[in-house]
Image (cartoon, rainbow, N blue to C red):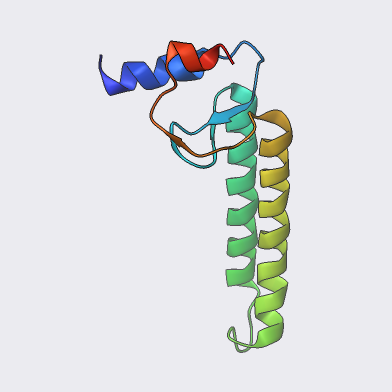
Length: 107
């Protein structure tokens, strides 16, 4: 079977309605429903707004420590919020190497 078809079927097999499903390879999540994609797009948009607003508003030295903290802290907060949403609205994360077989889904 084609890997893309397998991946699409894996994401569609979502009886619990998770926004994020476990990645088939490694640890973490991948968006499975439109709500998950929306959360990712909002995260990216907020990061872009932060970066673009910082580019426009730096009159002095951009390498000073206070500028870094002002820039890094919102990114850290946004990332923690995205991980929290993925954890609450997604499958419980675990290491996975390959697509689950039919027998493993019966657990």
